[in-house]
Structures are given as C-alpha cells and as structure tokens.
Amino acid sequence: MSVFSHPEYDHHEKLIFHRDAASGLQAIVAIHNTNLGFALGGCRMWHYASEHDAVADVLRLSRSMTYKAAIAGLNLGGGKSVIIGDSRRDKTPDRMRAMGRMINSLQGEYVSAEDVGINERDIALMAGETPFVTGYKAVNRGGNGGDPSPLTAYGVFRGIEEAVRFRLNLDSLAGVRVAIQGLGKVGYELARLLSGAGAVVLASDIFSENLSPAIKELGVIPVAAGEIHRQAADVFSPCAMGAVLNAESIPEISAPIVAGSANNQLARSADGRRLADADILYVPDYVINVGGLIDVYYQYVGTDRRDVRQHIDRVAGDTLPKIFHLAQERRVPTSEVADQLARERFMISSTGDAEVTWPLPAL
Ligand code: NAD
Image 1: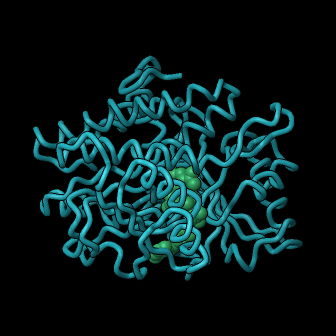
Image 2: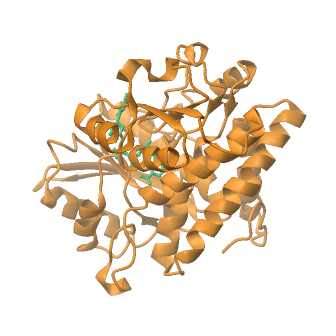
C-alpha cells in the first residue's frame, strides 16, 4: 500500500500502525500537522471493508482536525486514530487498554478522545494506561469532564440557527424542518435541542433501537435510512459517517441548507462547488462540529469549562457568518473559504509568527 502517494496523504507528519498480539488490537494513528501544538483528535472504531479504507479514513480525519483546531482559534495540531473492528462485536477492555498503551508511547504528541464507536467508558479504560486522553470524568480532575458529544451537538444547533438566519432570513427555528441522518451521541442530543426550539425533526438511523427513544421521547418523525437526504426539509443534517455529500446524493437533496456534525461530509473537495452550484448553503463540517474539540481541549488543559459555550458561540456567531458572507461576495464555495481561513492560521504559524490570532483569540 502506498502512503506518500496516497490520494489522501497531505504532508502528514506521521502515520503509525500498531498491532497488539495479546488483545488482537489493530490500530492506526495519523498526525497531520503540529505547527500550532500537539495533535488532539478522537479515536474511531469501525468495521472497515479493507485496511486501505482505514488508512484513507484516518488520513482524512486527522487532516480535518488540523483545520478544525486552526479555525477554532486553538493552539492545537491535527491527529486522529482508528481501531479496525466492529465496536459492537470486537471491542474488549483489553483492546481499549492496549490502545491506551499505544497512545502513551507517543508521549503527548497525540492526545485522544471519543469518536464513532468509542465512548466515555472506553476512554476511561485507556486512561488507566496513559494521561494522554481526554473527554471522560477524571477522578484526578475533580470528577469534571466527560463525553464531548453534547457540546458538539450544541455547536451544531447554534450553527443551524446561524445558517437559517443567513439563508432563510429566520430568527427562530420554530417550524423549521430538519432531517437528521444518524441518531447517535451527537444526533440524539441535536434532535433534543431542535425539538426544544420548536423545530420539526425527521431522522434516520441504521439501527431501529437508536430511533425508537427519539420517536417516543422527542416526537421525531422516522425516515428510512436511504431516504433521509431526499426529505422535503429546510436543513439536511448529516450526523453519521463521512462522504455523504457526493455526485449522486447532492442532486437529490432538496433542503437549501446542509449542516451536521459528521466529519468529512464532502466525498471530494469538488463537491463543495457542486453544493454551491445547486444553491445549497453548506456549513463546513469542521467549523460547525467544533464544539467537541473545544470541550475536550478545555478539559485537557484544565480551563474552566464554563468558557466552552462562550467559545462555541463565538465560532457559530462570528466565524460562520463571516464564512457565509465571504463565500457569497467572492462566489466561492463555503468549504473553500473555510479552508483558506484555517490554512492562513496554521500555515502562517509555521513561518514563525505564533501571534496570529485570527479568527478568534488563541487560548
Ligand atoms: P455515534 O457512533 O454515537 O453515532 C453515529 C450514528 O449514526 C449511530 O447511531 C449509527 O447507527 C448511525 N449511522 C451510521 N451510518 C448511518 C447511515 N448510513 N444512516 C443513518 N444512520 C447511520 O457517533 P457520534 O459521536 O454521534 O458522531 C457522529 C458524527 O459526528 C461522526 O461523523 C463523528 O466523527 C462526528 N463528530 C462527533 C463528535 C463528538 O463529539 N461525538 C465531534 C465532532 C464530530
């Protein structure tokens, strides 16, 4: 398998493969860029169809963490890890501990947290082997901390509010129809916030047991998994896996706004242009889903978590409208505007100008 000539390889600093024979763990860590600081990014457990798919995923995910940290105004680099396996079948405490030891061997160059298939209990097991994890209730930090998903959902909710204000000229979400793909840790909490704001929530999940409580408790309208992006809605909100915005799906989206938590929603960067040409306001994924990263960063460095919501509000209330306006003025896709702004911050800092604080003051 080629790495340096891999289509998703983007000047990544490190790609580390690890197998723990005793537990059967197979994991990959990718560190994309550490110009701004150590790499922070979650650990995903997924039943990849091939090792090639796992490598492509970890390269893409780690790259977007660099952009996410930069646009959030955090002095952090981008990294991510993947564990190859089905989290419902193959996850064992021994594998989680082995993952903790693997992370520990990197001595803080990479710090991990939750992602798809990895929950707070798993992170707590890893924490028994390494201090380089965050996003769990740490006894040594006064029991503070925990799964960042609720704050990711809060950021997505705030991003949807801003997108609806910009694109639909509405100051309230009452009656706004939002179609959520994936009712996991983020999707469910997002559905709860949207229902509370009076939005009409439609949702799909590949597992019916994830859908049932939302139907019962929140009055969510269930939709078949393959149909959710086609729903007549104001907002399509991808909150499951990546690459859902592609040449086939985009022409089928009827919502004027796409705004969700999933990482790497665009199958290819050209799909950003495809969305703009279809007159769909795409809220760049790594900007709208920044809440979780901000939360785990504050947890890790021990800053008062009351500031987290304020920080998320600044990204949603200042950075997102700036991206929307620049995209409109310059007639470029929102995804390209976001990339350019993020790159300005993490690339300039590589030239030695560590004082760059755009778009938000560095912490
Ligand atoms: P999760 O594993 O808890 O939830 C994902 C849900 O999507 C599951 O319920 C799963 O059954 C469902 N799903 C998978 N494929 C689907 C499909 N084709 N159609 C409908 N449903 C499908 O994961 P999560 O933590 O909620 O994360 C969701 C997305 O948000 C991921 O892309 C993740 O990388 C991203 N994200 C999460 C966080 C966080 O704080 N958890 C932060 C930033 C980004």
